[in-house]
Length: 273
Image (tube, rainbow, N blue to C red; front, side, top):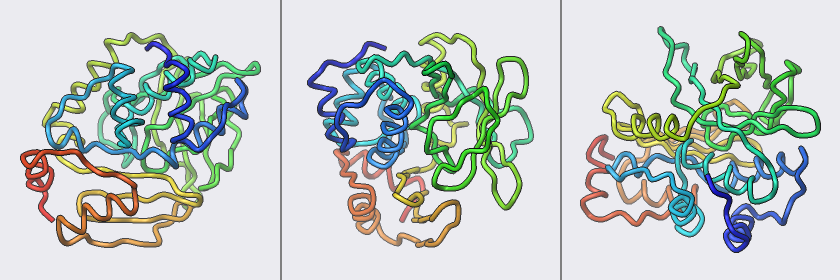
């Protein structure tokens, strides 16, 4: 993906509430931490049937100018464009999501990036929901890292294969695995197309919105609003009407939709408020 121009970069930094950063681990950490708190994860375009376009200019218009969010392919590709404009050299990797212990091997349907910095290789990811790591992780160290929500780590499971894990109730839970191998842009396009268009995709059927807070995460799954501190859920509320749902979207996630009447009907018809 091409890197963004200076004007776009400045607008991006304004959204992140950051000034320019150095091409260092500290700079990358600041970018990732602010990104997940300022730009939400959301799949609402998928639910209403819009095509997910992964070109740099489209992603910038949608997410930065349009003040929207996106899912992993959108968020991480846009983030990579920002990183390149700053002098970082991100490498795309595809991941398999292991949440809820699937019975069979899950597909490669998650996108993240690796960066070589200061003699180490870090995983950076601004597009994974749930108990995502808040900070970049050194993939060649299984050291336990306190990221603000609890303890995370990356373990090497096979040659060039790694697993992101978080400790929950004293046990390590798998989040997603990835391979440090070259992939093509077509691999990303194919995975995104499947996740946005296939009726087998959970994103096709369900509304997901989430954003990190200073001490946890806010989530809206269908009609249920949850808030957690660390990894513990401290609030769970059922949203009863469409008007309340849209108000929550604005008040809690700072999202306003430009959907047509038809799109709004589709948004609420699959699982009505």
